Length: 392
Image 1 (cartoon, rainbow, N blue to C red):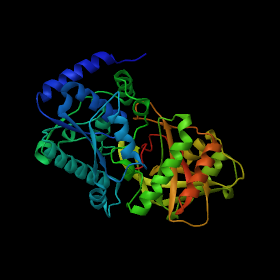
Image 2: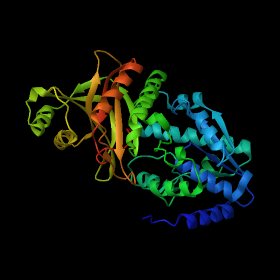
Image 3: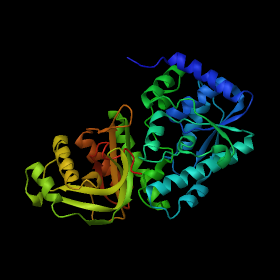
Image 4: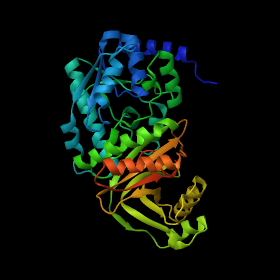
């Protein structure tokens, strides 16, 4: 049973937005996701044609996404006025040379709001509408990771910095509640049920420094994972791309994993990746090691066994933010692809999805076929905590 009176919430927020904006024009950046879609529809009901909707093509969207989203939002029943801003070069330049996860998120946020500020001035808007939700605020305030849409809550004055005031119609809701509102508003299922997609897009799934080549490999890998995993309806599912470079893991990690599986040490291989990933420890953000785990025992490991091995590895080395289980690979390549799927209600905690092993292998094989620079494909078997859902 829902804990939200959806109809009352919509009525109240339409009134709140109308009172806040009056006769002013407002701008919203839409992504096709449920948060920005609900925020746009509520605001459109409140101020009508005084709302301008833009989709920022920052080069970090999935293949063909800008055009798909514009078509979906512009068509009935939503009929929102959407135009695409082509800003790929601007964003790639802003993130050029950055490898630290927080630095990348902060650079994205700065560029995102500068871009919106330019658009707002062009549209004559002094107000910005955002699809901030409760989990965004809690994660940023808690120091776990910087969400790109959190400003005033962490002391950034958007009027002083970017030239506009911010309105956040759904900041009191969790994701599952936002979906309830979307269904009530008549949003197409492709929007109301769409899996979450990070504001910085694929930039947080290209772990470490972003290059055009690495980003293109990520787009292809992500498409493969979405196509194979969609039927199982995880709360979120995607691929991340990392450098293929590995480092030697501490002595004893492979033995700990082997002991948990009751197999010989020679059946297990554990290594560190050079790049690091975001995790959580005692409620705070960590930037920890990523361990890869390969089983050579000639059989497929079940999820109980994978959890035992994962727990053994991270118990021995708490600084490991996530563990990746090897699915398929080849002799050479510049990158490694990590498949991720989780089950969660509020995204503050999450468990891994038990995607069938045959599907994992089929998705991995497609990634190897389409991504010529990928040497190995893995499944991320780390819950949240100690990992975050996204890699950065």
